[in-house]
Length: 323
Length: 306
Image 1 (cartoon, chains in turn purple, blue):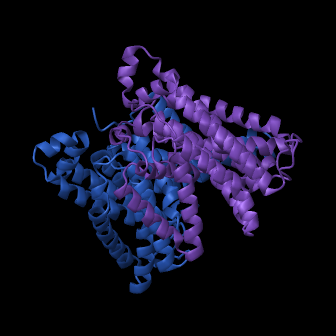
Image 2: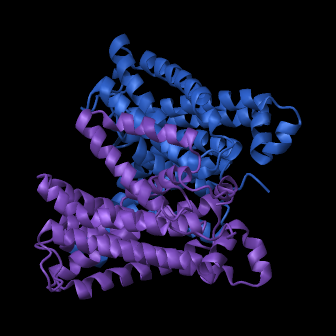
Image 3: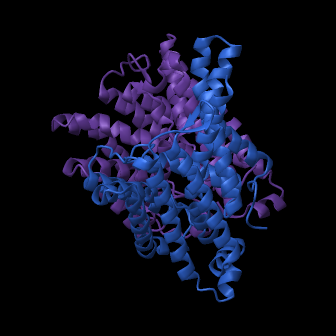
């Protein structure tokens, strides 16, 4: 029997899901539903962003309410580089990851001195600072944001939604495989151990602060990648990507999907965006319906949607209190 | 920079700070005692403002409108506490965040269904529509002066209730050690409901008083909610005194920096850079303030516990 700290995917289910995702653009084109290819890319990008937050929040136990800062910083890196003539994805996407990681390192180094609700608020504070910095950068669009003339250049043509879809799918799959390896590694176990009992890990002799910071930075870096992708998907970067409501939405996705489940971020992002899409096609008052659904999920499924599939038992309720 | 400008904005800051205090007081008590992160607190403020606009239009009197709005929002608070909040007390913070986020969506869309997407207007009462001359050649809105007065009165009232009355004692006991208060046989359920309704009433008061200055519209709760959270974190969660100091600090710093910072920057650097940098710095300043406070005093200025 494997420990509670071990998280695995069912290989068969993953393969089937991957095959379906690879086939999806062809099916969509055959049935004349091309619109949904772009929508699916958006879902996957938010799935990546939510997964990166889940790494920090669910596995690291750090309730960060400023995650959109790294997401937005990644997007702006791509947008700003492109405005200065650097269109190559091979330069701008790694740069987006690096900028987001550096930002996370700086913010994390200060924020991780605080605990609990104070940590939530200080991460929010820093994200709001980043938000206002970008609003004031009039050279890069200020309030209105920055339009991208084209998608980043990769050597093959990303202009078609289908090509971009496959790039997003590949990066999402790689990132999730990476997160999977990470949480099951020695590092991942230490981080989860810190989440469960920080004092004990400290007493055993682990440099708790350093482990948490590294986890925080990796989460920020992945969010930066998601940001680079959303900039390409929307062909627009705007301060809205960094606003605290965006951080809140990412957090709601993770909680809805399942905090501390490998698939939690993906499930949460997909369900939330699908609900928005479906409900808004039925009624203009879809936000009311979305609210009711979210409320029902909290009251009926305390550990999120992923808990429907996994039988893993963990002291989530305790973890949230300490966080 | 002349002194009247500074005085005027300092008074505006004081007025805004006192209104922030009305929101922060309820938020900090609910947070400190029930350990509940209530993101929907701003929705009660919005509900209060909408009620005030509606009742003022119905009765033709701002005062009756405000009174009815406060009562109606308190009732709404009781309903909300019994139907939803009560189920969230024992739960972890993340569930509370998700649930109260859902409530924000429900409240916002509900308001849009009932009152429409257009902002409502709420006018200040006629008696208070003319500015008064505070100093020679210095006129100030009498309505804002009235808000300052009302805010101070409520702050004193709150202090008396919390420090001198029995229910205030129970609230303080709950804030400093919830488990012990329950163990001593306090009917904590009732205290919670009353407290929540009281917090809602304070929100409604802030909403109806600020209604004539700001627009009554959907989403007005969220922007002020973040400020209220900043206030209670600076002040120390669960502490009324902290909420008051934090609210005044945030109100004055925010209002003053918005006018004075661009002006003073223009003196030391080219105007075009200053006009870009000023507003951004001013918006950031309260977050810098909060980060600085937390850096040196991670529990806030006046921690309620320990």
